[in-house]
Length: 274
Image (cartoon, rainbow, N blue to C red; front, side):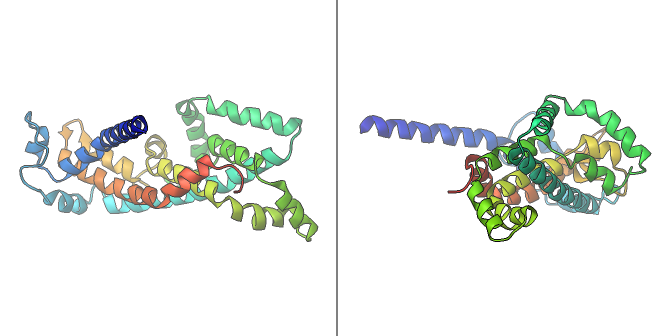
């Protein structure tokens, strides 16, 4: 009994230590967002700023060359459209790979898994050439459509649907539903956990994307991550505004994660229906 309590206490200590370690970067962002440039670049470290500097926020919002508000709106549009499109495409692809077992589906599954082994950076050049030829530079079509297929999301959906009870689909077919109606009225409503989990992962990844929006986006479609990079120039780094902009960019995804974290855990740990 005593040994179990000691082990439980040790687990709590390790969990708290790991939580504090992973929260350290967020603390640094918040601390520097309300500090002056002298506090940030000082060789002497203070856990709290000498004085709370609220002018960083007003300076960030008033900077028309950066346009943080427009950049946040562009990121929200891009992330929302890409999440919706990727979830729909991966959901359909994962369901087809799970339900139709033949040579073609097995070959497509092998190709899908193979794409996970290809570094994403190696595909940017051909994707950029195709996007430029289609005239999609500086458009949301160029930002969203090339990233709408996710091999990782497709594989997660396939693994989920392998354990999904086919009896529910058979019963709906007996009741007169066609396969398409059965999919949307029976399968999809009972897959909300995995859909929310995959959607959360894709949403956060799309919001934090930097390299592809840098290549395709311009002034009209500049995302928040690209806008923040404007604070780093060859003349120097504007640390107060950079950290304040980072804090503003982090907050939406922080609220999304806190709201959807139970779906994220449930969707990735539960297969099929309870």
